[in-house]
Structure formats: structure tokens, C-alpha cells
Image (cartoon, rainbow, N blue to C red):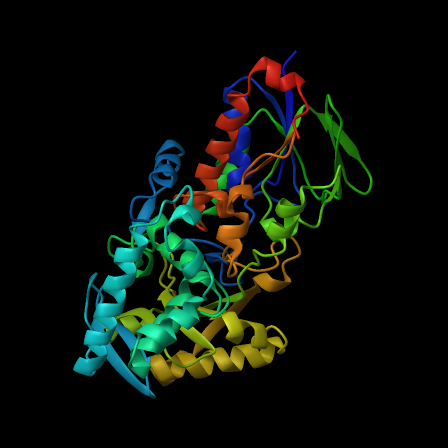
Length: 459
């Protein structure tokens, strides 16, 4: 009889774990709180019949596992629109700059020198991090004891360069520079290869999109599984004995040999555990909050910005929409701009009405692209902070002191409970690639347990 494993969560990490476990001969069941697969990947069809992504959408750089999945399932990749000039909006003015990787904006020479020096410095420090054990670095406690904001104030001198790094924090983490540790910032840079890679379209993390949306990857994996997926069932309790584990919802329960929890740490901490989680694992879940983000798609009769020689990409020093991309589907006569209200801007806007958010969005787009931005067809928003089973996006970020005090407990199993999810990945942490890799890791972890260990109840 095959040993049974329960996987909690049908996002990319859970589905990948289930797939790999099945390949290793395990009997797998997936419990999902939502009525769909995909987790933080979600596609919808607009009133104008466009299929739009309201969750994670870009893949690129060397995200090899995502590329393999797209190839396996015959999903078509196409490049993010990157022809023309990008917009840097600063001090109430539009500055146009090249869209190629490494393009230099027309800024004060002192700002450029300050910015270049700071970026090279963080890149050098990031490359010295041990991704599997960030806390072993000789300066780990020093770097983990300060936020990125503290480092900015101490090491960057011009106002504009400081503001640029703060925008980076919002764009990459959906958080303020004061929200997470400088060690986590360095870890994240190396996890995603380099800061320039994280920020770039060309040879960067935003290089490609999937025709029809990234949720298809989860749907295709789910279709390939023998495992049953139980939908609309939030898990409330996990109870362990020496021989088995029982997973409870409010109305049902399931028994298995082991369980894989793929929820973001802050949500995993809301489950009741019997026996209780180790103190440090429990405290860890309280210290990795998700980012604050509202994703907004605005649909137009055509991508008018392209005629003006613009890529549709914006980095603005003024909010609430500071980051914008061309989000037009591969084949469409319509045009789509996607913008983000993030960090403090997102936290403020989540308490506004949709009408207020729409007005604020359009005001920003007019500043960047002109009055044509008012002539829209549809406005579509997704507030991930209000999503019951995400409570934010894009991923969890580590507060000051977390890596050095709790890092060893991030994916260390607790008896028969194993942990996955993009927040547990050393490579491409926080991205879809990281989610897939975490699923592979946990399946290998379970597959390597010896028969003797299977019988033991380790503390």
C-alpha cells in the first residue's frame, strides 16, 4: 500500500510537490481553501473579453523550472513589450530613458555617481551571502539588525538616489524600505541573481509572459495529477501522533503519513497544531508578513503609448501608482496598462472606495502618458490584501532580526509536517520559480526519509 501524503495548498509549490511525490510512488491528496488552483496566480476574463492576469505574471532571466514547465505543457511565451522609451517621473516631470538593460537616466551627475556607487556596493555584498544559510555571514547580525531604510540613510547621500532605492523596495517587495532587514534585501538580490536582474525586462525577471496567463501552469500540473484536489476547504488544525497525521477543516478530516504545508508563513501560523509548533517556528510565522499591493489593469481601445514611442513602463517617485507596465495580451487590438499601489500607498488605498482608487490611478496615468489615459474602456483591480487566503503579495518579507534568530527553522520539518512555498526557496525566493523549486525540494526531502525514520516520531 502506498504511503499517503497530504499537501495543503494548490498553488505552484503544492502542485509541484504533489507531482514529484507521485513520481516517487506516494499517494497524494491536496486540500485547497479556494475554489481554484493557482494560489497567487489568477486570470480573469474582462467585459471586453480579454484574458488578464490579476496575480503574478512575469517569468524571465534564468528561471529554468518555469521555462521547463511552459515547454512541457506547450504554453507560448512572448516578450514583455519593451520597444521605445521608459518613463522616470520625478519632481513632477517626465524623464524618458532607454528601455535596454543598464540604461542610464538623465539625472544630475552627482545623483548618478551616488546611485551607481550604491548599486555596485549592494551587488558586491549580496554576492557574499550564503543563500542556504544567510545567517552565517560574518556581518549577518549587523545587516539583519538594520532595515534597508537605515542602510539607505547611512550610505546614500543624494535625495534622489535615496528615493530610487525606496521605490525599488516597493516595486520588488510591495513593502517600505523600513519594513524588512538589510540582510533580507541582500539575500533577495542574490536569490534573484542580481538587483539589475530583479528590476529589468531585458534579460531580467520581467522578460516574458505566458499567452493566456500563468495560472495555466497550475491548471496543467493539476490535470496531470492522479491526486484528488479537495476545494473550498480551509484547513484549521493539524494533529500528529507517533504513526500518522490528521488534517482537519471545520467539517472534515483526513489522515496521512505526512503533510506538506505550502501556505505563506503568516497564514501557516494561523493553523492550530497538536502538539504545538516549536516556539521558534511559531514565532517565525509571526515575523514574515506579506507585502501590501493592489494590482490594477486599465483597458484602452489601443495601446496609444506605443505610437508615442513609449514602452508603457513607468517608475515614479510620486504615487499612489508608482510602477506601470504595458500589459497588452499577445493578440489584441486593445491596449492594457497595469499599475500597482504598493507598500504604504497600498495600505492607504485599501481603505478607499473603488471610485477613489480609480480616480487616483487615472490621475497618475495622465501625468505619465497625457490626457489620452482618461479615455479608457475598463478599470479592473485586485486588492491582494483583502484576498482571504493570501492577505497580501507578492510574497513574505523578513523583518529585522528574523534571518539570524529564526532562519534555521524556515523549512526544518516538525515531526511529520514539512514546509514549502516560495518563501522557503533559496533560489528565486518570492517568485513563481521559487515556488516550484520549493515543491521539488520538499518532495525530495520526504523521498529521502528512510523506512526507519518513517516509523519514528522525531521531536
